[in-house]
Length: 260
Image (tube, rainbow, N blue to C red; front, side, top):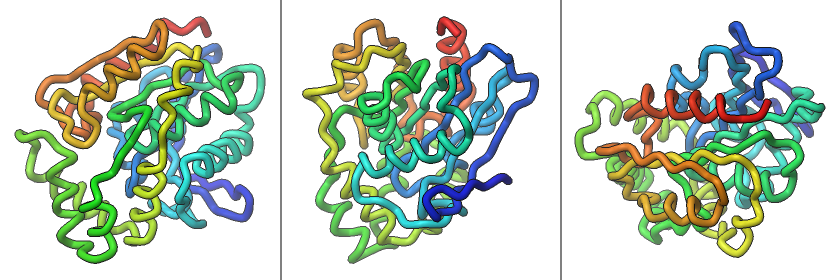
């Protein structure tokens, strides 16, 4: 899989460009706290007819560098990545973010709206408070807290194999990196500013999400004029892995509405 060196950090990403439309906006997928690009389902990473870049954020997956403790710092890392890809040209792209990645996408849109053709916000909010039990537990009881996170991030009827895979991948990330991610999330609050985002936006969440309940997505929908809200029944916080076909279909239909 390809890599780019940005500000001395080697960033790993996956690229899909099969039969991509020359006039269609590319997608850049940004995972959540403690995640990696494999938290996006294959159906979305290989969306037909689109150029799709799925990034491992610094310090995550097989990317080098250090994790951040601030959403703005992650947004700047994404800016450096997209600039290195040459996506700063005349054809804007769509930023797709899950949870912390959704916070990064909002921050990016507030700072660099001219770079974007649209946003897809998955299981996220304009404010992301983190339970003290998680913030302290990641460093004091890594195994127990990651097991708890696996339960909290999935719906009640999740496939046990998916749950085990999520837990294994989460535990591949150093505790300090996950802790930094959650510090960044806990400090994130763009409720006073999110209404300034004037981009076409799709908002997706699971009806059974315990980490960022549907009311978070409803708030975003109310604040973002013309946004579309999709709430998927029985799905939890990892809605895109629990119901990959439904999420990918919603994204594909949203992309067809964009002017590009």
